[in-house]
Image (cartoon, rainbow, N blue to C red; front, side, top):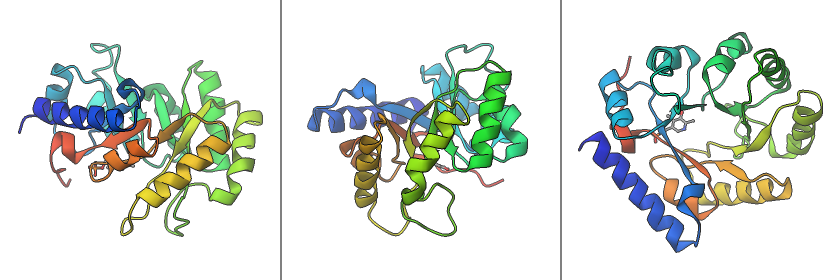
Length: 222
Ligand SMILES: *Cc1c(COP(=O)(O)O)cnc(C)c1O
């Protein structure tokens, strides 16, 4: 399989799923997750016209995309992994969307860096929807206060919610909880769904799906 045919295949499934739920397929952004993928695959994706990519580490994202931004001005880079506060400035310089706002200290630093660099970066708040102790994300019962904090204290542009549901359980229940939570808070965007479950996520309102292996194949371990 080539990258081009993979992208085509995923996009066709997105279209089919949208049709099923009378959604507009342009309302679903396919983020091709390029972490741990070799350069030639990223290049193939670019050559078939794909522009939205997801990375979970700031340093690797620079290695992958730092020198490509100039040649591809419409590149959209999404940070989908945890962000350490000492990497905030670098992240704000490179990324166009941040999906993982998950604590007050980070929200404050982000707000400050975005203002200093005069950037406009839409953000998602990551929700620990399965309330798993080892996972990052805001607990559902803390969400209302946290959203208020992001808006009033940090001047962040929060456009939606993001989650990674528990691995061993059917994701649909969690996607449905996310949808209701976003609605209640008047947020229009939902970052949820990966290779194994993006169709279900679309059925339940996902606007940003993060798909790695179905686009690029298995990741290299390094
Ligand atoms: C790696 C990653 C993905 C992509 O996972 P696939 O199963 O390869 O589609 C999606 N979201 C996050 C947060 C990830 O870290």
